[in-house]
Length: 219
Image 1 (cartoon, one colour):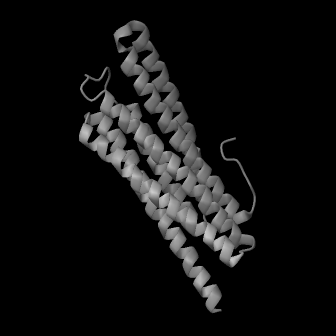
Image 2: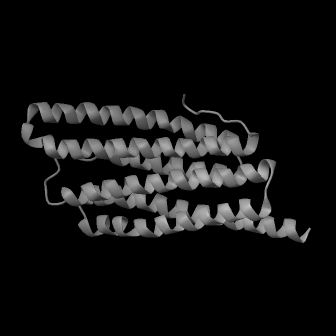
Image 3: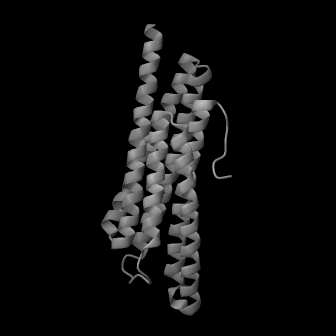
């Protein structure tokens, strides 16, 4: 009983560490896009600098998962819970990397007049950030329905990405001087689309955790 209690506490601590990492990642997304919209180099740099903390936390959680498998030899759902933890931190780390990519672009174009008001890109960011939050909520609650509902927002993110692509392409065709910045903004849109994809991956991990089935969302 003591061993099981200790193991349950370790699993709870693992979950809390994953949520802490998720919170930092959500903040990185929001700050990266805000730094782009406000052309705030200092804010962008904070996102870049903060990535080291996220990377370090990923390594700590990874180490915890490995130790739990080695020392507890978990079976069935306990093993799925740890495996899902591995998967979630991998996706969160990649999301954080994309936030850094956006922040680096924000720094590159900080001193240039924006070729167009940023409307759809912030909308994409809000949706992507919401997806990450809901994916983590689904993980905590072991809520398969929420995982499915969250994943449906990916279609809207994809639609906005396509819209951004079309609009920026027109800008580039009409005025070659916009090509460099438009290309950077296309990258930002693509990074946000990938963030939404990683949130969907987390949702798939939740389904695996609860049901033991590997199911693709938005296939």
